[in-house]
Image 1: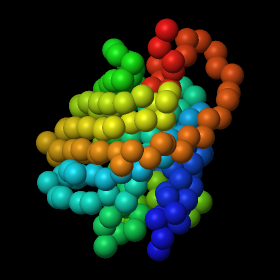
Image 2: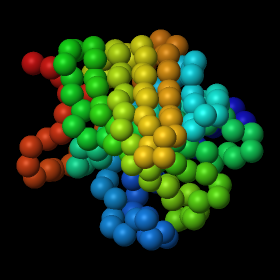
Image 3: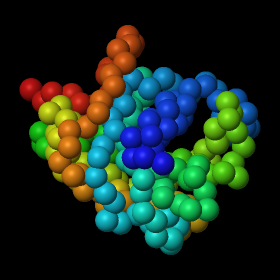
Amino acid sequence: MTMKFCRQAFALAIIFIAAPARASDELHRQEPDTVIFAMMSGKCSTLKVAGRDFACRAVAFFQTEEGRANFTVALDDPDDTSHIITFSGDNGRRPEANLYELPIDRMLLKSKDRPKADGLPVPSIESTAGLCKQVGNFVTLEVSSISCTAVDKNGKKYELQYQSDGTPMAVRRIKRMRVGSPAVSPFDDLK
């Protein structure tokens, strides 16, 4: 399978993450729509899921209309082509132009064994505590690294160390009207 096809398939899978899913008791309400999606090109020097080491096939960022931000990783798992993890959180902040920090409060875990909605696995949602730091500037489409760590309530650890290969990100922005204060996005231009 070519890298371009993998990326297209991953992008499609991410879009369906934010689509309504009702096949599982875990998702009773309609999920908010994705407003921005960014696909990154690079490699994962570290990817650990509950004590197991993996390589990654792709890394992406997406944010919902309600402000929830997500760093999603497609795992290179020979036993499960549906294996995807997402570091998810609210209240991201940009303390500097080239730094975005996202407190992580949940992990979304997809695998071939999960129930399906529209043919895609519905994620298991694990409460966690953690943090993702993205170095670089989403506004200029240049991200140099992403590091994420999270620990769930059972002590399982999730870790990501990603380095860009220097290729600009592929970004899809979907404009929507929101009521209330906008969430901080790494794509916002600092003033």
